[in-house]
Image (cartoon, rainbow, N blue to C red):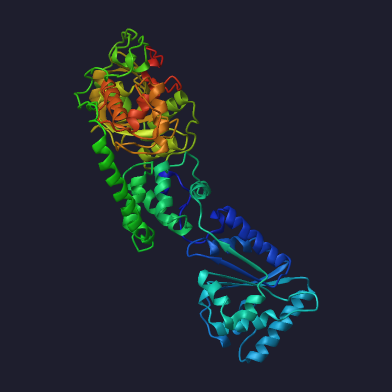
Length: 576
């Protein structure tokens, strides 16, 4: 459902063992090298151990692609829950040997003859048994007897057993000590680290054909690692469900909350909470110790100073006084934030001859939905210096305009408002136009503004400037506002949040001229208050939460970035 929305060629997080999606973490690289060594050096017996979902089968299937059929004869048994009498017959069948009406002794001789023939031809025979922890002891003993087939110099068959940790316990049992002593190569697959989890997700996205910035936020990665503990199969399940949630919410960004919801929806018992319960008593004890110490020291300390009051929400565009600063008075320096409070001197609007509304609507009706989308997007692509559209858009054009922008490193704010939001955000956008006079939608890019006049693309009736009044008459209220999240900062909403990303945000706030005392990792009340003040000055709701609109405006005010702005674009009042 979400493949076209995100621009994937195929599902990136299927749980089927597709070798094309194999990500070689350090432990997987080591396992892969051990497999190749065991087979090419004819060591005889190799064992690979890994927890459920760590990628054993995917690794094996990728390993098989490295075995040239000209040089190797391969048999692969998956979860062979068979009796000791049946295992030999099953192995012979895998090597395409005739088994009908043959006794165990005859099957053994037939297999031995086949192995000798292959050895004479210079071919290596490989038998791989997956999910080997399910084998009975008697079956494993039969496999040991098969491993006895050898010449004076070479093992005639290379055996690889792959299974869960139960296989290791099975092999170390006294009854199987002879088999265990024959294992010359033994290795274990471990869970992914946090860094490898992030790289694993990015790798699968790339293989699936995704070319844009990673849709998973840093908080999404943290939650993903927290819930999956680095198990590839659980990572796949969570990511697949989170992408579906993003699709249903029409969001190209996968947040930490979406990962949490994916975990709750999947349930299934594999999100174990044993770790939490194991340390709960210790956590409670530590909490009580600190709580008691806090009460004791609090009784010794003088009453705290009166805290700085939170700035209540104000009506949009109302100017508010700066927060009180307790530091020594210094000579005031102009800041970017102070400049926001003062109205900017705008160029006088050009005088244009208004085009009748009927003519504008007729011009819109005369172009196709696809034609208008191409012209609108490519106008913005030129402004942001990204690759233009050259291929056909998918039938769901609105969503295509979202993911093609995302694949080019741009972010999208999907607004449902009026032209005032375009003035407040001062950022190029694509407007969705719907009229009862024509079928489907049309798309119109806003590429510049002077006063109450906007430059547009494509031109309407040969004119590429439209008045605010005319815009209100034809616009449906839906817009795709394009911007860049240069630092890839996630939404930050909760006061008291402690996260390394908060420090990155505070650096941005300082470069935007906000009064930030400490560049720590806590989203403290002073920072919330400054954000609220900034939002109010820039004409968006002052809720103290850092979302896409707030980040967009902060980048505009920062001295470190130069995002595209409507008010700085040159507009031409002539005919197109």
